[in-house]
Length: 65
Image (cartoon, rainbow, N blue to C red; front, side, top):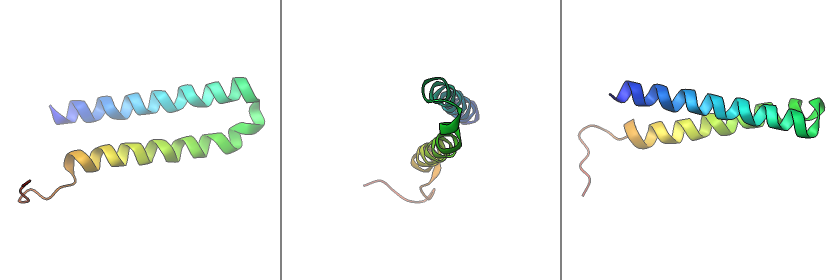
């Protein structure tokens, strides 16, 4: 079920980013959206990349000693 876990990870990350963007828009006004949205997207992509790297990034023949 790794595909299902990956899908849940991507969807929950996307929903978190959307919620944060909406929160920023409501609290700080629409002007900050220009700065906040790309920053949140980059932070989300880094988090997803790190999670995927931890799970799938190791070579299959490497042994954990």
